[in-house]
Structure formats: structure tokens, C-alpha cells
Image 1: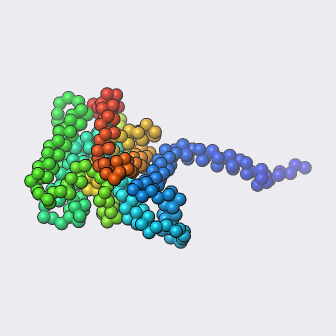
Image 2: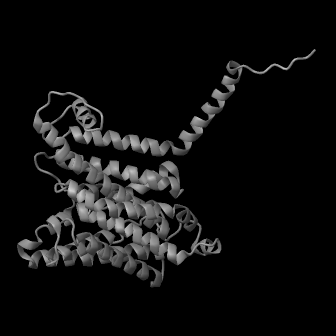
Image 3: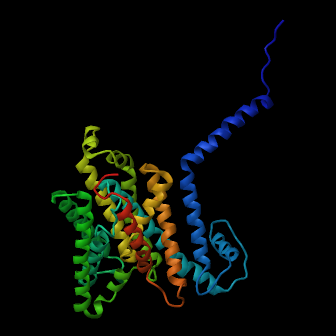
Length: 368
């Protein structure tokens, strides 16, 4: 008589383990670059917290951070000044650099996807200068501005960024010749005009315009929790809107005519993504001033890691941009300490040669 035997749990377990072990590599292969970028961001942020005029040990810094968590108590015998340095000076500055870096990288990735141009960047398109010009108008106007950081500043910065990117887009569409090259040239030309306008306000506005210098050079020495709280909604809303259009950005890489044939409302999607990206760039300028080339360098590095699928490219670019700008800010305050180098100067020193490299090796006519 044949009796069927039911497999024991010990006999089934190896098969279950094999299935689960096969799932883990697939999960990591799909999201590995995102995890790696997140780990890099955490490592760079932790190093930045420990370095400065007063070097604080990593173990002490981690203990101070963990002690602020709910239901966690870590007793440490540390000077009271260290705690103030970590939470009142360095941490707001690091979070501000992370927000600005992610916003600039996110908006740069969105611009490159919309325009199908590898050189599209908030700085090169004149968007950063437009936001800075709008912020400068808000500063010299009688409208209320809280410590020249917010109030009407982000509103005017967004208007300046939106008007600038619209003008650049219209010029590139109407001008003969290569649309991609015209796009960059129009952005550079408008950026020069807007920078001249900012300089004019500096020369004629007296002491009232001194805060505008922060926007010209870019930096985080005025970062505070209040300004971060005011900037976060702008960056979060813009990032959410762009992320919801990740699939459409993928379709745009084919061709606008093909995208329309696939049922995409090209004009509507273009305007929505441009507005969201400009909102993020304007908020970044309102926090840190004009910091160039972050939206050019980081998206290219992210694209080399994960390809052109914006569903993975956007988060990797955001995390990489945050880590990049935290590292740049750390270098700005430690290389020539106690003197501080403007962050915008360092990013320009890195971004200028990278831009020339792209001009030499990549097509800029709107193709790939």
C-alpha cells in the first residue's frame, strides 16, 4: 500500500530560503544605487557634523543625535558648547545644503528630461539668475521679508525663475538652427542681463542691498531652522510633482511627436514639469543664493549609474546632489579656515571644466 508522505518543514525550508535569497539580489539590483546614494549621504553628513573649527568625535556626535530621539537616553559627559555647535550651527547648515543640493539636482534632471538636452541646468538656463533677480527685487522693495530669506522672497524668486525659463524656451523654439545650442546660449545671455540688473541694484541701493551679496556668491552661513521650515514646502511640492511625471519624462526621451501619439499631453506636461522644477530652483536660491552647476554635474553622474529611467534617476540624483553640496559646504568652511570660501565659487570651479568636457564630448542639439 502506497502512502503519500507530507514534506516536513525542514524539507520545505531550503526551497523557501532559495526563493527568498533570489528575491534579495533582485531587490538590491533594482534599488541598489538608491541605497548606496542614501548611505553616501548619511556618511558625508556625519563627517560634516564632526568637522570644523571645533572637531567633535564621531562617537560623541552620534550619541548627541541619538539622545534627541524619543525614548532614547544616552548619558555623555560633553561640553555644552559641543551640543550647541551640533544642533544650532552645523545641523541646520547641513540640512540646508542637503535640501538645496537635492532641489538643484532634481530640477536639473527635470530640465534635461523636458528639453532632451544634456546641458540643461538651472544655472546655465538662467533660472538661478532669474530667481536671484526676483529675490533681489523683493529685498529692496518695501514688502516684508523675514531676515532677507523669506516673506516675499521665494514668491518673487519663483516668478523670476518662471519668466526666465519661459523666455529661454520660447527663444529656443523660434530661433533657426540647433534648438539645443540656442537653448543654452539664450540661457547664458539672459543670465548675463539678470546678473547686470542685480549688480545695478547693488550699486544704487545703498546698505539695504547688502544681503543681495549672499545670493550672488551662494552659501549657508545664514542657515537656520526657521528658513528651512519655510523652504521645505516649496521643495517638497515641486519634487512631488516632478516625481509623478517620471514616466512621462521617460516618454519624452523618444520624441515629442511620438509622446503625443502615445497619448501624452505634451504642452500641459511640459508646463507642469517646468513650473515644478522652477519652484524647486527658486526655493533653493531663496535659501542659499546662486549656486551653479550642481544640476549639471550630479544628474550626469547619476545617469552613469542607473541609466535614463527617471523613476530611479530622480531619487539617485536627489540623494547625490544632497551629498555633493554637503561635501562642497564642508570644503568651503575648512579649506581656508577660519576664512570661508563661498560655496558657489567651489561649485563653479568644478562645474566649469565639467561643462567644457560635455561641450567637447556630447551633442547639444537636443538629441542623445
